[in-house]
Amino acid sequence: MGEPNDISYGRQWIDEDDIAAVCRTLRGAWLTQGPAVEEFEKALCGVAGARYAVAVANGTAALHLAAIALGVGPGDTGIAPAITFTASANCLAYCGAKMRFADVDESSALIDVAKLAKQVKSLAAAGKTPKVIVPVDMCGQPADLPEIRKIADSVGARVLCDSAHSLGASYEADGAKHPAGCCLHSDAAILSFHPVKHITTGEGGAVLTNAPAIYARLRELRTHGIHKDAARFERTGEGPWYYEQAELGYNYRITDIQCALGISQLKKLGAFVARRRQIAARYDQTLSVKLLAEKLTPLRQLPGRESSYHLYVVRVRAGKGEGLDKVAELRKGLYEFLRQRKIFTQVHYIPVNWQPYYRKNHGSNFDECPSANAYYASCLSLPMYPAMTDDDQQRVIDSLTEWSRSR
Image (tube, rainbow, N blue to C red; front, side, top):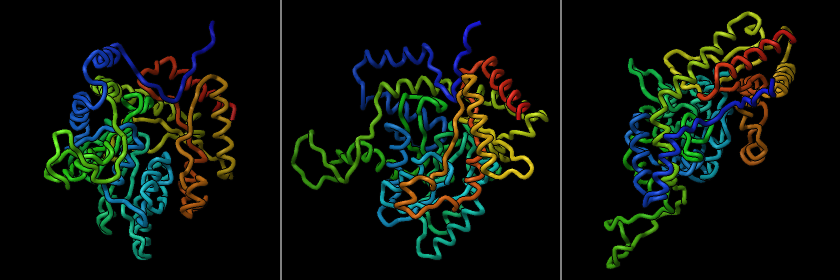
């Protein structure tokens, strides 16, 4: 028998339809700033249920532009969860905001709304009322957006939802089911189209919103802050070539080539999400068996949420008398055990408040979010992607079982 294939934690699915869509664009008249961008944006609105979408170069650019459009500036205070990719916090820091980090519920890795409410109240009492709160739909499961919206409204804060993990997911509120990214309980939401996400454009992202003013500003910010609205010109009498830069914007545009791929990928989103849920269900069943259940536990899925499973995270369980250092040691051992068998897992995420930049410049520290620390010490993302075969998943399961027996 040959060597076993590598199994990564995430991977894109590209088929002949995707390749053909990109080739048609390459043979056409527009490579960038053309009709495929608007078509992709309309398709995103159809999936997410938001009124407007602005496609941009990547998910970080989406977060940055959304923060600007929501009015974040120097001296403001922003809140992001400790467990997320750094971009969720960086977007506010780019704008000059001072960052504060919210603790998470270690069983779900979602922002802990009870702790958030106390934190927001405390900051407001100290004269540091948050300008924007950035909840994260971790691993594909939507955050408690209705409750976070209430907390934000109590102090006049905006809500920018990081939905990079949750395209195709949904949550219930007021007796109805709402798609992730619908912006019913947020001022804006962002998506990412990195290759490990639900659909890919290579690199790419989007901002979703239901607010016309936010949408209009996002479109200008995406292209250097430039507009061609004659009614707003400060100088008149020029020709049809004339434009003005109203504010400092960025070149965060996405290409028609990328959007052609995105349009094709979106047509398969339902099948992609269904396969991810199938893989998750098999992992769930496996981890319910006593041998593994005593050693590992999956993230808790909350009532009223339907995850689209960007990631499947297991947490190493502490044995009797074992502290976080021992759990972290066991997690590292499991990571290496699987790696030796060509099964490549990942850790999502290192607490952002641990990062040297935030400790040096924003006053964060290692101990401010204890539940985030407990989550980080134990978490490991197992392979999860639509192209993963049943045989590949069985290899992962067999290896987890072998590790559990050896522990």
